[in-house]
Image (cartoon, rainbow, N blue to C red; front, side):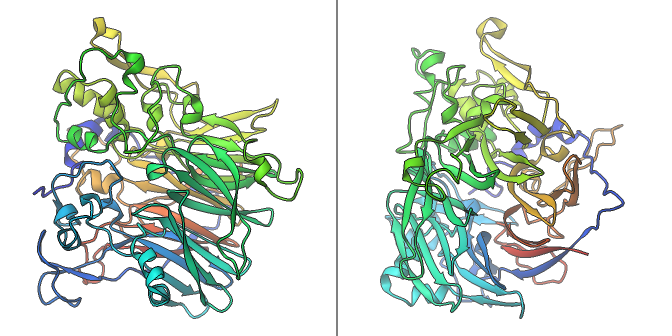
Amino acid sequence: MRRRPPLPGRLLPAFATLILLPLLATPAHADIRPETVRLLAKAAADECFAGVGVDYPPGPPCTVGQPKVNQSYVWGLAQAGRRLWFGTGANVLCLKPEGYQVREPILNDDYVCEFGQSQPARGNPALPATLGDHRTPEVYTYDLATERLTERTGDITSASPADANLLNTTAGLRSAAAHQGVVLLGGPSVVGGVNVFAFDTVTGRYLGSTNLTAYENIRHWVVAGGVLYAGVGLGANGGEAGRVLRWTGDRTDPFAFTEVADLPTQVADLTEHQGRLYVSTWPKAIVDGSVAERAAAGILPTPPPVGPSYSDVGEQAPRAVGAAPAADPGDGTDPADLAGIWMSPPLAAGAPGLNPEDAGNWSQVWSAADYEPDPVVRRAYALGGLASYGGRLHWGTMHVPLQATALHLSVYPPRSQAQLQATVQNTQRAFAVFRGQDLGGAHERIETLYGESTLPAYDPTANNGVGAWAPAPTGATPVYGGSGFGDPFNLYAWKMAVAGGRLYVGTMDFAYISLEGEMPTPPAGTAPSPPTFGADLWSFDAPGRPARAVDTGGFGNPLNQGVRTMVVDGSTLYLGMANPMNLRTDPTPGVPKGGWELIRVSRR
């Protein structure tokens, strides 16, 4: 049994040079009113844990074992009047995609992933080990007037056995939206399709559920031009293609949708900008994540059989079951298969909003190939939040830990430990932030606000065919600073939102997990700024100004690794946090605790 996570400590050498980068926070202008932060609600312990492979004792309270908090993310969040609705995701850090080869459980002071040794998995041999830590997601409302949290999960599970089964087989309620008197909460099913649940926002009555069998993933919704849209993915883990759905339902028929975009990659986030809908996407399905786990453990991958050339190695790379074949990793990669920004036809053209005849008329206006110089690493780029601000579209990248490493190892297996270490180090990326105007037009201009002018790229022909990494130009001159707002552990620009004239960016900070909660000791004679633990929230206070750090420490809880979702109410933000530390349940006041948090950020 592994006592430590598969990634953290083994990554310290790879990140060693990154830790020495200066972390620079931009001070607020004198005319900027700073924000106040308040914790509104927090996940409670819901299970007792007495050891991996041990049946769960009764409780909590726990007379045997210790309390455990399974619900780790506020995954979908929406506002209807003076009430917030949200759905959770449980043990998200432990859930692995189809095709991932799980080996041993993980147990440390912060969290446990039991995989196939969990009580549900041992009691159900048909349950894949990748889903051994799955728990039923929960639904809550938070009344902003009375400050009362109410669990609504029972409304679903008591409605009918079919409704209960749909909720029990939902991986997590990854998205939420409220529109025209209906709140919709949706998430991928562990047995296939996307499960969606509906409530009446006026009466609070549960309206029912459905399984959308044609889709496999859903992340975000947006209201644009008075119409509600959702982005979805098709195929295993959503990795084959994407669609944008227009909601055509109402209280009497809450599950009516029509497709208005047919895209080659799954949709991540959506926003309205200058009369069009823009979406960010994830790339085609890539590789078996266990390759990254072996790399973190310092295990050299098995070289591929002699024969395939560089041009067709992409077809040999391991990938999720059911995923489309990987594209050629060379210069011939189709940008449409990479993470990108896609632009809809004008919302006002023809019938109001987007309609089925618009599905094939979207245009890709940016892809990861426009920035990342390494043709293999760019295939692992994903995109996160995007928002319209100051007449320009803003968006940011996401970098799943070690996914680019795994892909690179599958294409170019290293021949030595030194090459393995070089691949791990040189494939790491913190997020970049971009803005663009007149996208797709004659006066298009795209700027890199935070990023790099050079990044490591691999040349397989260097050193007489041994290969080597070297800096390569990105074609960008960052306007304000380095990737991740200067923090190499800021891997996701997870969500963006405009509130009160400010553009906010919420991040996922991987430092706590990567460094096992312990700050590294800098080399003698150096004075680098140490990394921070916990998610960040940054604000662009006005167009043309650099971002300002609102908070870089998880809002007082370093276990809050990410700002997963945001809802805007005037100048106020409501944040749903990701916090997967399921064993951190010490009730002592002031001790950081695991589990989701709902946070309000408002002006002073």
